[in-house]
Length: 300
Image 1 (spheres, one colour):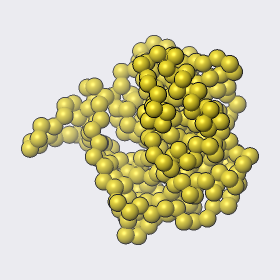
Image 2 (image 1 turned 45 degrees about the horizontal axis):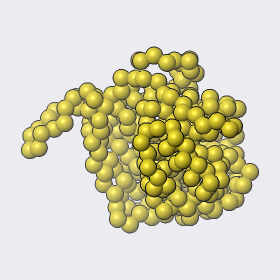
Image 3 (image 1 turned 135 degrees about the vertical axis):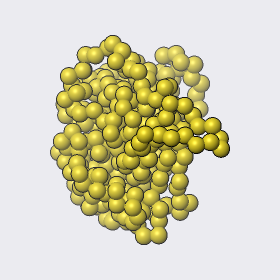
Image 4 (image 1 turned 180 degrees about the vertical axis):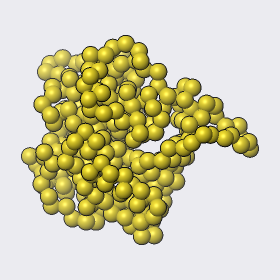
């Protein structure tokens, strides 16, 4: 199968700390971790790491960080034909302080006001397409040109471009924040409130809806039954990229013959395992490691 991930590409520099810095002081750290980031970008990287034939489409600056993103993709076999490195544009850069004592993250992001859009026409046929809402115009063209493909959206944050793409996909896999911001419905943590939110999303977009709930797992409807599918309990040190990794795993499992329930369980597991190490891409578990732990329920 041929996969395409289209959307946001950025670069992350993560500093591992054991306490948040006090203003106007110096705090020495042993090392920092540099790697690419972005929802579709991270998902595409995971798919390639797990042996899929995957291409990425998006933009970055024709600068040091953009070239690092391209080299990192190439190192795992991602096709970067449609990764555009644009002159006079600075690659989105995030400085992440990862507090390993409580798994909190403090993120400073540098982002140009005027972000160029994908401009290279992509008329290829794909079996699976994952979008994150960052490249609305190009994503819509490709989705419409691949009506037979399995189409998935990572709806992480509520923005018009993401909402506009939701009707064109088969699987709307969204964060709790997206679901609440879009539906404007109350949520008190109960299954009943989740059902109302899920029903609103399903009625509006007419696709399979999965709502991610961070460490609590995810919520969906399987056949005629609403299900909260729990994650495993872990001693997290860094949650950077865990949601992106969940979406990459979801895309892999749902397109490799797994049921929706098994896909959700294994994606929960993949995301949870990724929080045991610092750094988004450095924390991605191998596929074998996930499958070996598929029945794991205890704290690790």
